[in-house]
Length: 239
Image 1 (tube, rainbow, N blue to C red):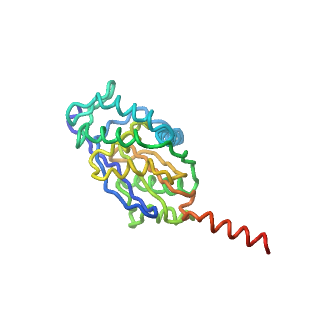
Image 2: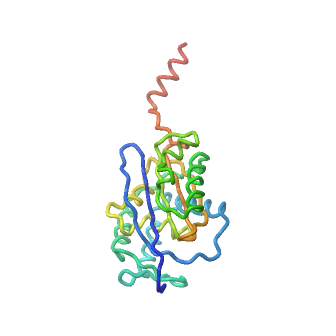
């Protein structure tokens, strides 16, 4: 067990119509060894997110397996370099299993350039100044970062610090230890999401971080109602 564990935050800031922001959860950081290249890591994180969304039943089985590694509030996975100290022990794992067991398969999240650029902007700033959280040095929000890249404000953002294992990053977000309303869990399985941008890299305090920006559209624009599109097409055909 680490004598002096680092405490990290797994955060979400959300601005999707009809959904509210959430607080942060906390886990213990493991040291970083053998970090993948940024591009392969980003692809791997997105693949793990999509794997969980596409087959919730299979993901629930991985949570059941992980459940056996808890000893009170300590999580000790076989072969891990550290023991994780959680806030709630196995309780949120059981909640996550029950939640995921009732989820239907969700659509694949497709990479989106603007969302990826916004995520990369935040990751680059925090890599430079060592800050954490969703606010930029100038007070900017996730929505502001997407706006600066030419998009709109209807986006969500998740950030993990410390973990370099793509599967573990997703497990942390779904278990959502320490977050009362389990907002990260709900966001990851939100049926309306279709796009994501991921940026991962070093962090001067917590060694590693990943930012995931998600949206219902590839640029944070609001969804247009099918009826309105149909009306517009019909009008154009009659003209």
